[in-house]
Length: 460
Ligand SMILES: [Zn+2]
Image (cartoon, rainbow, N blue to C red; front, side, top):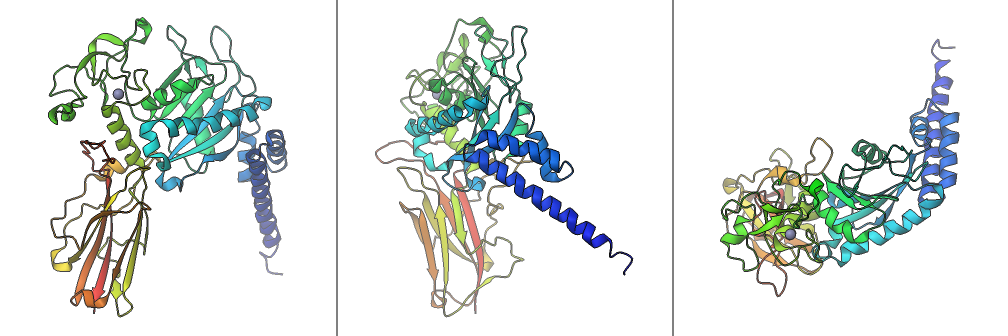
């Protein structure tokens, strides 16, 4: 017997244990997904006890605590997480017998967004996921009483007792999920009112009407466009896309709307919950006040935020190859076909333009071909790429839109002289809806509305 032969069965047993534990974990997750929450909980507990040293067993142990993550499911899946805004819906204070009720509440949230004009236009840019969180108790910490809940909600230090949650707990729940964007809407069963910021909106009870407003804070980094007498609400004015600490028309964050002389935008005092010293762009009643629609300035900010996550080009074939080092595609007698699928806003189409640039004359394209790019926190951040360098050459095919977002370029060898070329496809959202005089976005400083794919080809 080889001296190490005794190791093999041991190793196999170890691999078996990991495999078995992983299968058991998956089974528990599937039970949660099917709404069999008690069964999922019991399965996590069994696995944690049986295989404490396996990776899956350690995960199961985390999910066996009295308040814990049980699983997740899609509520609305429009496309791959890698190129959508993933909005995670979480609940706090939902005990075992309330979890089915939370699933119902979660199902009611996407329709709120679909009915809202701005999000309706970019509806299929959004995914909604439900994160099933078990709370041991259903209270909200405060007034000298602590409750064991999944997100550790407490009564905030405000006059009206706005509910707040523990951001560290939200992050811990994100970490249990296979994909997320650090964006969540958290519903606190017994909380009141709402708060929002830094990607997380917190809603007390099921105050659906405040959901989109709080999401404006959390996702759009927008300020309040109302004033109030609640003294505890009056922190620093701050500055956001829609709230200014100065009335100077050249210095307000929406100065470009004033410069363009848009008739619906001005500078009005009363914002950020203050009557004085803070200014807002409109008087028409934005969602960041208490209106149904976002004002033009907020809408622009939200569209830009959506494109910080979502690349206008969803997929392409063949795989793009921006680097010159990669072998080029050969354009032979059978020709070459390039397919690009762009994103599809609800009522308007993105413009797609194709160029074929001779090697001697290809531009510096600012590294625009790298789709997405992720920040260190794991979140998508397309704004980091910066605007694409304009191509001044005559396009091979001028800008065109297609309602289904499908674009194709077929090349035959006879189309081109022998040599090496760069095929460039750029897609851009002009944000101009049919019948509207103004685009939704007037200023796109980071160039997020535009994207590019490129391929090297050789003609023999
Ligand atoms: Zn607004």
